[in-house]
Image 1 (cartoon, rainbow, N blue to C red):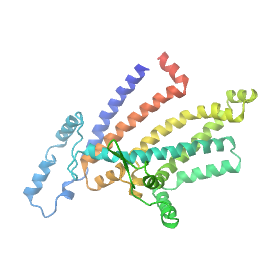
Image 2 (image 1 turned 180 degrees about the vertical axis):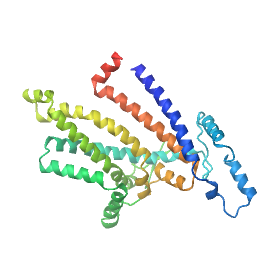
Image 3 (image 1 turned 45 degrees about the vertical axis):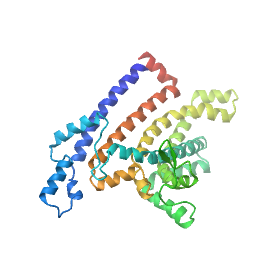
Image 4 (image 1 turned 90 degrees about the vertical axis):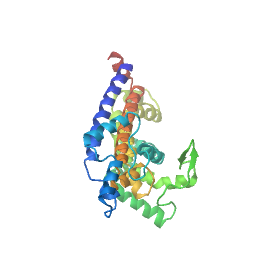
Length: 325
């Protein structure tokens, strides 16, 4: 296990280094923030002073090495627009995105797995066909359209939930959290459901396929022959074996929800990292965009590593293969 962990850490460092090059070159080669930040009426001397202050007067290779040197010290640059630490600015928005993503993940798991198992155990029933039809709609409908329809139904027509914003927060160790207040939780419901719809559909299809496959295995047939209760067969023998692909996909999808909740946060005016990214792209705030993308890369690596470790808990075969390796 230790050798495997060290090997994965080495691979992760290589990925971070490669992505640092791609992200920096891709972001810094596009556009000129001076054109947006400086008034067209500014003189040449004022414009040159702004370019030098932002470090844009140096060639790209020199800017990259300065970026790497500062990044190794935990400094990913200062925002051109907000004149503050870019990483600190992103981290200040991270709690809002994290609580939204985790609530969406809970919706996806606690709705998707049971519904998928029902569809897998009774594929030809009305319930099974209805569940699969709903999952197809969840895949097919655009995320922004789903968000607007949720706002139209629950905020405009029925007027039971707010249409945007974060609501009241409670400070916990200096971090504002919405889910600890009733008003904050009501503001979270619509964007969390919007973020969870596609993931729920994905989990439903995975759970259905896994349930149908597991139901045909010999250990399930043997359990039925022993006279075990159907509930025990489903919860012990089938559920545990379908969790491996579900955990794999949800690990990656959690990273997607955290990193790319841009559409949902924009539609619902949720003050998270995604909305900050959109604003920074519009203003060509390069340090914030680069810091966001690098934080995303590291987040995906950590999540993938955690998923691999969960394999060892869920599947004894993984532990045995690693022990032999």
